[in-house]
Length: 426
Image 1 (cartoon, helix red, strand yellow):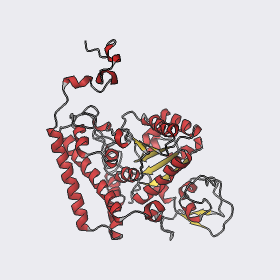
Image 2 (cartoon, one colour; image 1 turned 30 degrees about the horizontal axis):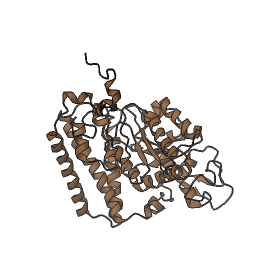
Image 3 (cartoon, helix red, strand yellow; image 1 turned 180 degrees about the horizontal axis):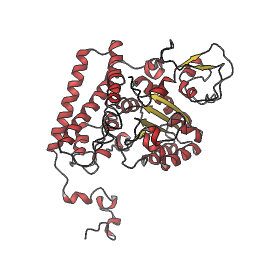
Image 4 (cartoon, one colour; image 1 turned 120 degrees about the horizontal axis):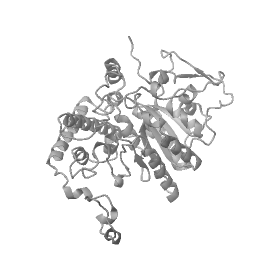
């Protein structure tokens, strides 16, 4: 019996046959100026918008005919030829593989240490989703910013944070990126325009809006990438953020990393939607798209379109990237093999693993060899193990450290710090 992953049905419906007729554009296509890089009347550009057509009930049959049979002769779209990807060097492609390998090895090492009782609090690992963080971070420039939810380790490493500071944070040590006070859900690197992981579901969505507002207020040509899980889309803060983003034309890109199960309830049981979650953007007159999270080329291509829209037109977007997590919501989620069958998890690993997909792609392109793969993976494993040694050797925060990094005034001994009481310990 074939096991269907939560997102496969919708992905299958995204295969279309384009007729030769060049009649008027269907209503679901964006306006002429909606895409800064392509002509909406161009057939290749329209192919990049097929997912939009997949959910349009009034689709004109003279323009696009949906094909439900996945055995169709129509090949899947190849995003390697998009401008943002065709310009990549072999070295850059190999670097993306190295980054994904490093993330997985870091997460595997952290999982091992957590189960050994060397960490406290929660642990939300990113195994199975590595292509998203790497693909999105690879597109960031000087004025682009990133903020995410509690599954933040991969984003931190992708923007350039070190394994040492991240692992030390997991251990609650003073050399951690948040000095041991944040733990798994609170990695931060303001110097890298990474504004951290946030433990409150959808709590980062208005903050992402604020980052975008700051870009517009300062006149900086950039985009704010705000990540969330599929469970966050039902929170009021998210919808309030979309409303303001659309009203004030804020350059923010909301990215739903949809693993299909939120904290442990399937998407179909927890969310009301017609065809996909990103479609809700239509209620706020915002552009949206659906992305295959196992294809790094597709991630870079479609996220780049949204980021260019933000940079050049100061307009928001919602992207839904279909992905899958191998582990539970957190390591405390011991029933993740009960609400998902082991066969389903294995099918994703066998057929949709983003690292395996990228490895196969680069091998077929003649960019990566099996020997190089082994060297990269081994180096990543050694780096992860070394970060564990670093974390174990790092000192723990002192009792006095509990009052540091709370108030700017007390940390910097300002005049305000001398007025009244800031801490009440009695």
